[in-house]
Amino acid sequence: MKEEFKKIIASSRHLFSKLSYEKSAIRPDRDWQYITLSFLVGLIILGMGAVYIYLNVETNGFWNATSSSESSPIRTINQKNLDAVTGYFAEKEKNFQDAQNNLKIPPDPSL
Image (cartoon, rainbow, N blue to C red):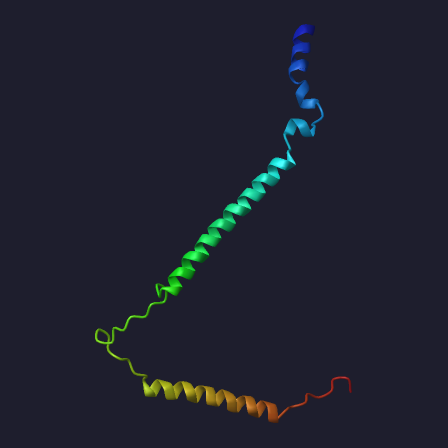
């Protein structure tokens, strides 16, 4: 019985031992290498994207407006709706000016 108990304690001794940095494999030099490598890879990818966009803008590859006036008719502004919108904002401006000019001072509650 004592021998079995000693085997159990010997096999579970690593659970009760103190942890050290060597056992958990913390290596700052390796971690900094990963961080630096990740940063450089990201920087290269962003640089390639910037060069790609720059070259396409220079050769008019981006935001290229084609004139297709024959295929789509010219749309006009509905005058009735435009008048309604401008009237709404004119009324808001009038209400704002009235509120600025006719300041109402509330009665003093301390009296």
